[in-house]
Length: 481
Image (cartoon, rainbow, N blue to C red; front, side, top):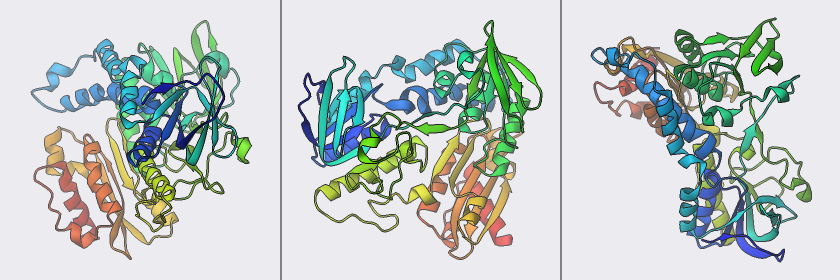
């Protein structure tokens, strides 16, 4: 691979052009190059994308010491030695190491190994199968794609239209994961994954956190008990969690952020984080040149091909199917295989769970929220399963009754739910809440994606004494219900 920047506008032809070099774009390119298709990758920021520098990696680097300390405090013989505050500077330094100091040399080296050509600059569609790249020096390169263009540009933080917001210089997820120090007072607006994880991290790193949630609880897209347990733990840690509260206006006065709420409260803080949703990075993509609306999410079929455009693929966040890095990488594997198969003139497999069908986006999405307690889920919630028309039953288990959980830490609190399809006798979804459950969820993912019959799960014997014994307790609860 050579990092390329053309000095003229003469078109260069490739089999595949990928716009965006985050984990999704990297994986598309890896698949197409492995099959022998010439591939160009266009990136306007850092190779490695949002996940590597402003999302998954830095946020989990911030949270790992927080969770490790919380676990240690639950163990007699160890708890007394970890009662002091975390070394915030050391935590931030370790965070910096995981982002490589916001330099992408290592990621570029990996991309070099695939044989793809990297174009630095802003890539825009300029017609069917054509991408124009404007480099940092203003020079343009025109790339054409014989077989496919894959849009892998991800998403960005969505800020609300509020009086005074621009002047207040709010944090988004990027500032929250890359901050150089802990603010004394931090207001977090939102109740989703970013909001809860960053509230957990910065509260433990020395900030006094106030969480403002418009709805009636946290983690509203998950099982209700998940948000309840996380809110309870945040409150016990010293955070102020206020539900049913919206921000009316925000300003920055002499360096202090002032927040006015619809409940009549005035809150002062050093920083304010808005974690209130995502928008697709498609507003400056040239979609208008091919009859699509700039700034829109891109509608795709299960092979990730954009509706009405046989050569165009939208992979990852931009299609709004499942805004998770691992799910985007899964889509990239599916899309890459579909591109290669179609380029060879062979038929794609359109049946569910086939090599070219991203079925898991609908039925088996896994997710971990790295708060204390952790929240892990795979598949559908009870409400989602019912809305999808499945006849289901949910069974719940108190995780503290499992021997492995009691050994994990004193005062362990958690809950598990399994949603079972009563007609097919398969597991539609599992949600686990409690310390350490993030590493348990793949078993649930395998059960859901594999459509493993409940009767067969009786023969999957969990090791004793582990937290995984919750599977036996869930099956017993289902049998006895």
